[in-house]
Image (cartoon, one colour):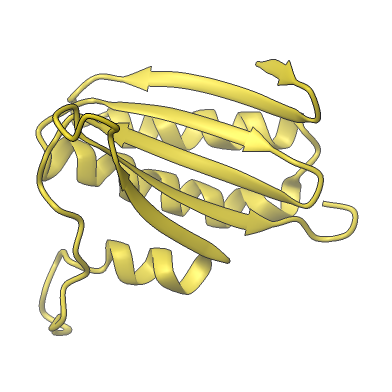
Length: 136
């Protein structure tokens, strides 16, 4: 963890392995609890797991996770090297076992987005922000 002016940062890299979403989820929880942000833990764990899982499963790459704590929010970024676009599925049925991750992201995050790398050849970053509650 580092402090950059007003914000704290924590970074981790996860390989393209099936255990990476679990490890990323645990890293996010430990980080946020260490920063005394317990009210954000559940949503952050779920969203980190979804995004790292997408990077590994759909993108076939590992994931770089960046968690930044600002005064009024936490911003979490997941970078992968896949050039596949990020698009929410339009039709998901109750029988589908996948395809809800971005819908969950849109429902839980206060804001989110996708940014291609500057040279557009090294992948993309999917990010989300969660507003801090008073006392958490």
